[in-house]
Length: 181
Ligand SMILES: C[S@@+](CC[C@H](N)C(=O)[O-])C[C@H]1O[C@@H](n2cnc3c(N)ncnc32)[C@H](O)[C@@H]1O
Image (cartoon, rainbow, N blue to C red; front, side):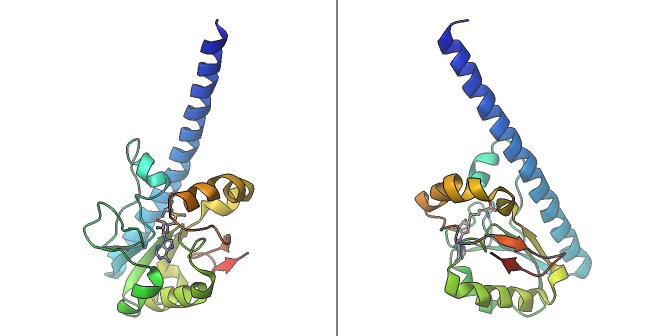
């Protein structure tokens, strides 16, 4: 086999493996979203999504597989594209509009990147809106791959204007309270 074919085959295999990992990780996120939605339906609450389903990897993954949904309302400073009800604003500027104890929250990949001086406020607003941590369903697979996100993917987020990865979310609801490193 010619060298060029061998190299092409190796590159193709690497792409397929990376895509496979992304699709598997995405499947876990979608499962969590479904749990949040079921909890909202059961408790007769609305579902608030923080962090667009169609930003970063979601923008690509939607062509290959199902991605998480928009909830009843979705907040992202770059908009939740394709979502019917979206606030294209920073979370810290809109969360005060949501009633206390009125929503189940699904948060994905947002708290790694919000401004440091807004983090505590955003978290306290999330607890207020959700009523308790069991009404928050957070997805943070980033912290399981710290080196990769710090040195590779983090630059990509910054480049496409989705924020800096300033911290890792070590623990998170519904099983734990939020802690950061
Ligand atoms: C790391 S990406 C995560 C994308 C996707 N939600 C996921 O879980 O893969 C961070 C997302 O948060 C949004 N974002 C960053 N800072 C924000 C803020 N202060 N308020 C609202 N959205 C913000 C970015 O536009 C981007 O969509």
